[in-house]
Structure formats: structure tokens, C-alpha cells
Image 1 (cartoon, rainbow, N blue to C red):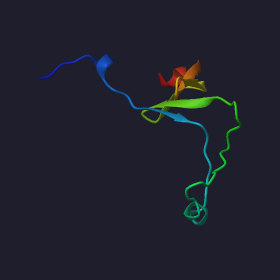
Image 2 (image 1 turned 45 degrees about the horizontal axis):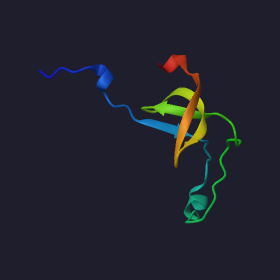
Image 3 (image 1 turned 90 degrees about the vertical axis):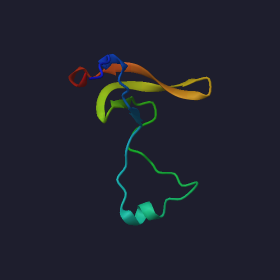
Image 4 (image 1 turned 180 degrees about the vertical axis):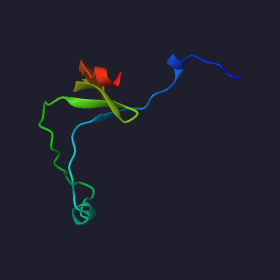
Length: 79
């Protein structure tokens, strides 16, 4: 039996900027250069998800040439 430390397990993180419902017809018109307007307002907190569950909220930051998230609030119910 293999044993390991649960703290070494990998967890997939995702950031949700916003969302939008589109009809199949409208989705079919999306192409390169299209802009899809989201329901989020610029500067609003973004959701940080771990394995599909919201674990925190934060703000988008730029680190060198990469995006990052500055955590501003933890969702204690998911941790």
C-alpha cells in the first residue's frame, strides 16, 4: 500500500471572471475577434474555484507577464 501526505495532492484551480448565457444560435456566431460580454463589472471580485467549488474571492493582478489573483476574501464554508 502506497502512503503519502494529503497536503502533496494536486488541486485544479480556476478563476471565474463572469458568465453569460447564449443561445445555440448566438454561440454559433462566435468566432475569432468576437467579444462576449460577461455579467461581471470591471473591478468586481473574481471567484477562485478549487475542483469546481468557490474557495475564495479576489482581484486580478499582473505579475511580470502573467495574471494572478490577490485573495481578498476566503469562503470559509468551502475550506
